[in-house]
Structures are given as C-alpha cells and as structure tokens.
Length: 151
Image (cartoon, one colour):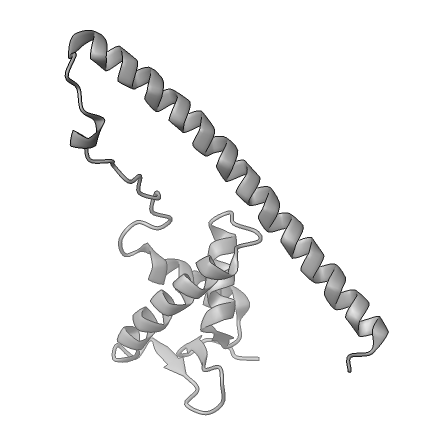
C-alpha cells in the first residue's frame, strides 16, 4: 500500500493534470463552436451566390504549424549552444537549450523529444566531419565539439 503522504501528493498532481486537460478541452470545445458558427455563416453567404452549394464537395485544408527552424539552422543553433555550454551535453539537454535560444522557455515534452530526435540524426551525420564527438559509453550519449574545452 502507498503511504498516505505520498498518496496525497500523487492525487494532488493527478487532479492538477486533470484540471489542466479539462481546461484545454473546454477551450477546444469553445473554439469548435466558434468555428461551426463561422462555417454556417459562410455556408449561408455562399448559397446567396450558388443555390445548390454542397459543403461536402470542399476538402478541408489542415493548417500547418509554422516551422520553428529554417532549413540548415538547427545544427548551427546546436553548435552555438554546445560552445556556450562548454561541456558535453545530452541530445535532450541540447534540444532544450536550442528551444530556449528560439524563445521557447518551457518547451513541452513533445517539442523536446521531436528536436532531440532531429538533433541525434543531425549530430550523427556530423560525426564523420570530425567536428563533433560523442561518448560511446553511458546513457544518454553526450555530444561535444571537438577541440572545445570540456569541463
């Protein structure tokens, strides 16, 4: 059985997370209602010009998220962050530093994990150039710039 004190902390954290998700769902429901009303207005307006308008004939466009990094800039940001740190970094720590440099101070886990994967692939490619070094032992791997002062 879980001790009562630990159970209180766990329950409190779970309830906080529940409240956060419920709030996000409410905001999404509110946005969905607003969008449905806007679509109904557009439907009526289009029908003024085209009586037999069929909304089903229009394929929805899914908005794309704006790219955080332009092509080729992730590695430059990563190298700058590695120089700034002055010590070997895990890909996760490096991802957080790079996101912070982009003005994202408290990135969510999905963003960090996505950038961690991108950085791991990119850094592995850079290994062949001789500019990057990686520890082959231990988890997580630690990445550094060759010739940089490692503390």
